[in-house]
Length: 462
Image (cartoon, rainbow, N blue to C red):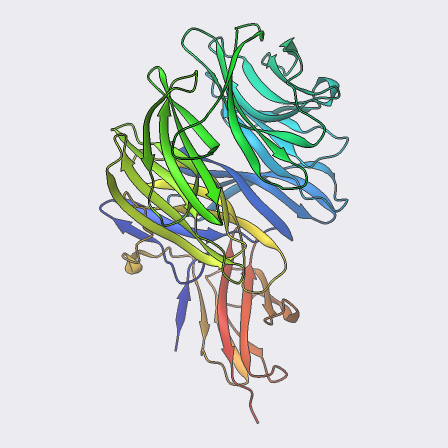
C-alpha cells in the first residue's frame, strides 16, 4: 500500500480547494517545543508568529506559508537562554503604518517587546520601563499604543510612543493581596476615553470574580467603574470588540461544574443590551467579526484523556445560529488566535501534541467559509511530496523523495523514543526495520524547508 504525504499533514487531513478556497491543517515540528501565538493573512499566503525552544534557547519565530500551508520562509529571533519556563506571545497589534508589535511573556531579564516593519524585518526589541509587562494593547487614535499590564509598582495603563517609550502612566489599579488581575480587553472609544475590562482571581480558589468595566480619560485618569452583572449569571469576559458605540463581549459562566458561554452586547457603563446564549458545543473564549453582520466564536470541548477538539460557531449579531464545526482531535490542542480571511475562510494558530510525545508544536489551520478543512482536491497535492511504503511494513520500508531532496528521516515509537535516524540522499531509499517490534511508529522526514510526518505500522518478521 503506497501512502502519499504532503508536507506536515496532521492527522488525516489533506490540502484542498473548495469553491476556490484552500484549507489546511498543519503541525510544524521545527523546534523541541513551540506554539503559535498570532496569525496574519497576506496576499500570497499566511503568517504564523510564535515561540519555540531549541538548543537550550528561547526563540521568537515568524513562519510564512503558502496558500496551502507549505513553508515559504522562516525568521527567528533569539530571546533568552532556556531556563525551564517556556515563552509565549501575550498580545500583538499592527499599527496604521503596517508595523507589528509583539509582547512575549515568560522571558526573564531580557528584551520581551519586539517590533517588525511591514516586510517583517525586526526594527527593535527592548525591555519596557519599570519592567512593564503588557497583558493587552491596542493602537490609539494617534497611532501610538495604549496598553495595560503590571510594572514594578503595580497594575496600570500606559500610553507608549512608536519606539516603546512611555508617554503617560495611569495611577495604580487596585488589586488586593489575595489574588491577581486578569485583563480581557482595552479599547479607545470614539471620544478617546479608554474602556478597560478586568477580572480578579483568588489565589486559592482559582476562579474569576465578576468582570469590572472601568472608564479612563484620554490621559489615564479614572472616570467611573462598574460590575459587569448580567441577569443570566456571574460571567467572566474573555474578549470584547467594538460594534458602533457599543461593546460586544464573549463571556463564560461556570456554576456547579456547568459552563455557559454567552455573547453579550452592552454599553461601556455595563448596561446590558442583548444577552445571547451560544451553542452548548464548548466553552468559547475568542471571536472574530466577519464584516457582513456575522460573528464567529472560537471555543474548545472538554478534554477527555487529554484529548480535545476546537469549536467554531457562527452566529448573526442578533443571535441566530448559522453553523458550527469542529477542528482537530489531539492531545494538548489549544488555539491562541483567530482571523477572518478575505476569501471568507478562518485562520487559526496555536499548538498541539503528537500522539504521546511530551512536547507540543506550532499548529496552523486555514478553513473554508463554513469552518471546515475539506478532503477534496487530492489530485492537486503539491509536487513536493514523499511516499512511504509498504504500510504495514515487514522488515523494511521504502521512502521515495523528490528529485534533489536531501534530508533526514527519524522514526519514533509510541513513547517518543528514537528508533531510527538517518540521512536521505537518494530518490528511493530502503530502510531496514528488522530490529523493530510490531507496533505503530511515527516517521518524521525533514529538509531545510519541509516537514513530512505520518504513522507507520510495523509487523515484526519472525
